Amino acid sequence: MTHRRWFTPWLLAGPAIIWLAVFNLWPAVNTVILSFTNAKPLGGGQFTGLENYGRILDDAQLADALLNSIVFMLVCLPLLTVLPLLLALLVQRKIPGITFFRTAFYTPVIASAVVVALIWGWVLDDRGLVNGLLQQSGLADSPVSFLTDRWLLLFSAIALTAWKGLGYYMVIYLSALANVPGELHEAAAVDGASPFRRFWHVTLPGVRPTMMLISVLISVNALRVFSELYVLSNGQGGPGGRDMSVVMLIQMYSRGFTGHLGYASALSLMLFVITLGPMLLLMRLNRKAA
Amino acid sequence: MTSRRSRRPGGFNTPSPAQTAARYLLLLVVLLLVIGPFLWQLSTSLKGPTEDIYTRTPSFLPEDLTFSNYAKVADTIPVWTYALNSLIVAAICIAGNVIGCTLAGYALARLRFRGARLVFGLFLATLVLPGEVTIVSQYVLVRSLGLADTLAGVALPGALAMLNVLLMRTAFAAVPVELDQAALVDGANVWQRLWHVGLPNVRGMLSVIVIFTFIGAWDDFLWPLIVLNDPQKYTLTVGLQYLNGTFSANPRLIAAGTMIAFLPIVVVFAVCQRFFFKGVEEGAVKG
Image (cartoon, rainbow over all chains, first blue to last red; front, side, top):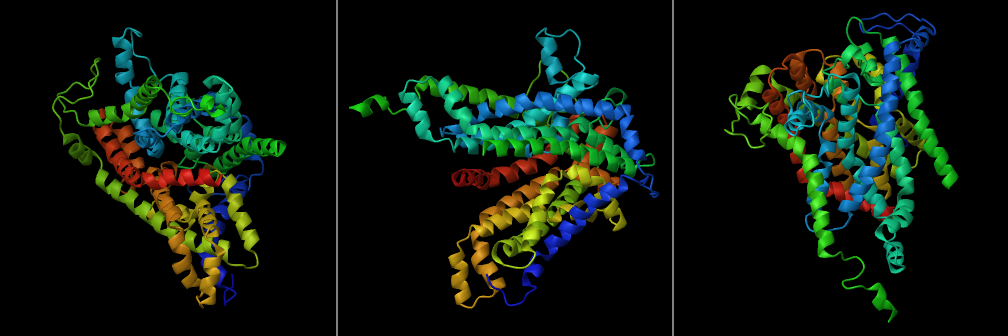
């Protein structure tokens, strides 16, 4: 389309370009610069070469955090690729009241992670709902320490992440299912294929690209986890700080007198490189499929 | 004759009553798992100080229903100030995104100019960058702007999201070019075309952006936690974690606080959900 003055497009796009440069591109560049300095929250910032990267290599807490990320990812991947698909199949058919169910299943997604973690913190408390039910039914003699044990705390955070994510991935699967041609199902049904076989041979191949995309989203989100672990552990990161995530470490080092913005930046850059892994894998798989 | 086999009674798509009943039963089980924890928290927030909330036989219905916990939580932390702070941040973000992304989206979709491809590519490139990765240097930036520990500092980076620029560009690109050309023949300038031809056709996308910007700003935790120090300036999420950390004694108060943060989101979502699922379905049609 034509416009009379050459600068009209720049005027329109101006604010967005300023935000792009100031709040996106510059911080990305500055993260790299800061990672070679000893910048502190209260000043400082001499060039220190590769010191921060050396520190990454022998940081025991970071090793724990990375282990937590891997466990997080490995447990979330099967749970959140399969359960939301089953849920989407459950709410796919337009039966009376289905909009209510779809909306209700999406509620945990729109709730703040802080709200969800506070609710689950109370549900999983030593004297909370789950422990009450466990003891009443005789499944446990004493309270299970969901929130104070190094591994149970991590698995509690995983459980609530999965619970909160169900509706999100359900909606993505729903739109993928809508694209699976109904005639294929009909044809398979005419040929006498059982519902299970139809699921295996018609539905699954139809949603496979979506499934790969969702796997990448799950992996990247598992690496980015923060609020769930932070709130469940009350900011402490569990016993001995062993339940920290990488982002919790970044937050910890960006504050206060003991903070170290240079090291936090090096950690950020490391996190970025790790998150690129699943994304590149997806691009590769897509290229192969094409 | 052949069609009779494929058309079983009611057609292939119609399940038997037993199947429908099983489906509803499953739906109700999932509903209980999803909504149960929220109801439990709501119930806890309405239980009086004399009622034993730790009882081993959990009761979802408060014995004597009371709203006193909501008054008490306001005595412990300035919860209404926090809600107002969250609202201010959300309002700035909504205004910025609606105006900035509409203008930029229109320019990228409808105007030809040198460098448009480069600008578009850079917007796209930011999407691979998770927000957590640049959060430290964003904090350094906001601090050097003198905005550390202010609500403006919390709101500013998200006041114009790159993803929303791309969404508005897609929305404007879907408006038939002929409409624009007709307006051009009638002598309409860029602003008139944007206002009278473009905007009426992208209202759906704008609603989606408003809803998601509100939810995103209201729910955000990590960024305000880093920017804010002064407990008077906390947003609701940071304030709730502060309550949880300093005042671990009374789950009733924490429950009341959680509900204050959660219920506005539910209302917004319930009112706007038709936009939301319509958007999903339209996306499905376009494939």
